[in-house]
Figure 1: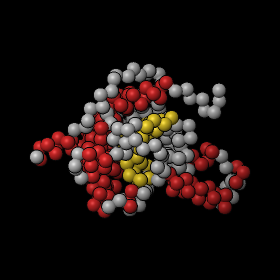
Figure 2: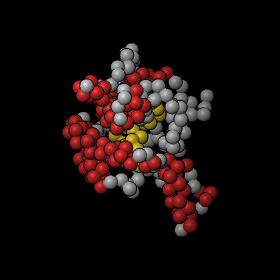
Figure 3: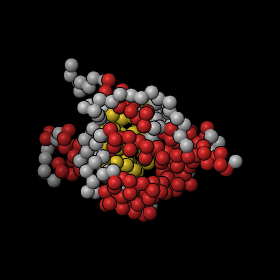
Figure 4: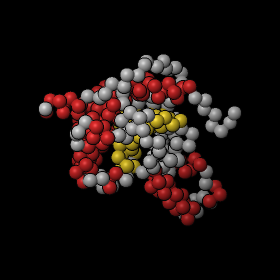
Length: 256
């Protein structure tokens, strides 16, 4: 019985996707992913929700390596939202342990693969043991020049925009600029993603078709791609399928 549950816990369902030919000269610079469906993945198997989160952690590695191999420059993963604190305490506590486990297991390979780890979010309320693991990974990979693996952790876009508004209001109050002088670039510079390009593509798994308070300002011209596949089953073929779809779209930015 335990061996069967263990297999269900640790093995993704094969996506059975056909190989997609990728054009190397049109790779999205920045891909952001709303990783959704961990709980439903577990429920389908009669497992606790935390089993889904653990399986989802394995999907993070698969997709990170796939993005790195394709030459994606930035991969932002929506790992924990400011709204996720409303979940049951035992689930939140488990989620706060996952960064430790993931980074402990994968940090050496991330270093070898020249991946740079970052965190985009508020450190308030995040347990010290979680922050310590993330900060260690950031420190150990800060000189890496390859893929930026950006975890949106304790992140919410409305709060991010509100923070930017407050910064600009303070600058106006102090006489550094007038309201008329505020530009889109000024707003972007006050966001948590200030030193990153806006996402070219946003992926959401699990069949939900919404953005859920994720990079609302930055996604203005992002290509959106949705799949019914739950996050723990998301794999390299599906990732390549999404990139292939991106490459088939014409990005006009409001022009012709």
